[in-house]
Structures are given as C-alpha cells and as structure tokens.
Amino acid sequence: LIKGLRHGAKPRTVLTTGGTGTRVKAVTIMELLVSFGIAVLIIGAALVFFLTTQFSLVRMEALIHGEEQARSVLSRITSELRLSNAYHITIYNTTGGSDNLIGDAVRFQIPVGSYSDDIYLSSSLAIAWGSNSVADNHIIYSLTDDKTLTRKESDGANIVSNITLARGIKSLIFRRTSSSSNQITVQIDVWGDAGLNLTRAIKSSVSLRN
Image 1 (cartoon, rainbow, N blue to C red):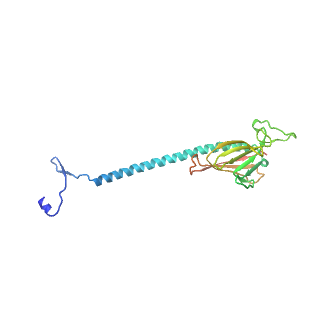
Image 2: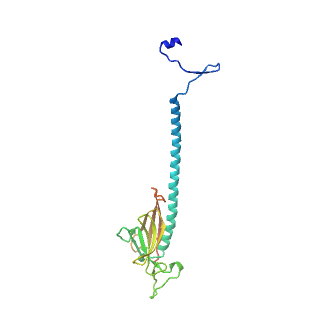
Image 3: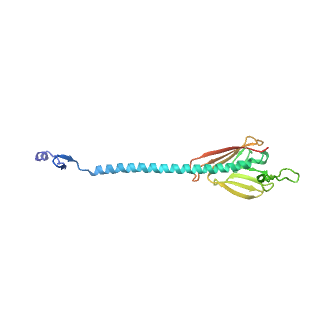
C-alpha cells in the first residue's frame, strides 16, 4: 500500500464479504442519476402512448357520432325531396349565386297533405304545392355559419319555422346534372362534435316524383 501511495495511486474503497474475498463496488451518484433518467424516459413514453391512444379514441367516437347524426338527417332530407319533383326544387348557394345545379342549400315544395296521404287539391282540382300543411310555403334545408344544419319553412316573405337537425357539419352539398333531372345527390361531410380535423362524407342519391 505504501509503495502504491508513493507512485500517486489512490486507495479503492471495497466491501469484502465473509472469507470469500468478493469485492462489490460502491454505487456512485452518477449511476443513480442515469438509472433515474432511464426510468423517467420509460414512464414518459408510456404516458405519451396512453394519451395518444385516448385522443384517437375520442376522435373516432366523435366521428362515429357525427356519422350517425348525418345519416339520420340525410334520411329525412331524401324522404322529403322524394315527394317533390324537378320543377318545384331550387338548388342554390347561401353565399349568393345559383345555377340550380349545385349548391349548399335546397328550397322546394311538396304536395300539401303528403304525410297523411290526403293530398289537398286546389279550386281547379290541381295538386296544391307547398309544405305538408300550408299551400305555397317552401321547405328549406341549409347550413348556417356555425355549421348547424337546419330545416326551415318559409311563406315567401318570412321564415315561419326553423328546426335544428344537426351540429358539427362541415359541409352540405346538393347536386343534379340539369334543372329538369329527377335525380339529386345529397352529400353531408361530418367532422365530429369537437370540430376535430377528421372528416367523412355521407352521400345519397334520391329519385324525385314525376
């Protein structure tokens, strides 16, 4: 030992157990810090994975709910459009301008009494067109600025009825090939309740009455 010290060597701290002569190095602060850092990385990675999975589930649930809403509304729109004909329908854009072929809103009339199968006839014995209960009224499906899909009823001058059908709708599109076509395609793009950047298109084609 004295010889070693003379040459500048430092004594090593060792732990000897029993008579076997087994030596165990003391754990340094640096080794503890490295072990702690590795544990933190593992826990952090697990937490990120958990949060990412939860967020994905929330996004999918929102989208599924949005799809269910859209399908229900689409069924209602097409069932009413089916009662109308090409000459009592106008497709237009709520922002202005219309070629009656493609737009984000539709205004139309159906035979009065359609829902009760008790068609109302005018004084000239012709079918009276309007809403289900009021002659000359119009039914309007459109999307508001806050992405709410509504069904309105108008008497020509005023909105007499306004019903909210679904929220969180990204876009609404009505399309036909010509103003005399008896086929209209309706498409609703949904993105879920929270406005998440995950969309899906629900589309249906409806045949109008002659």
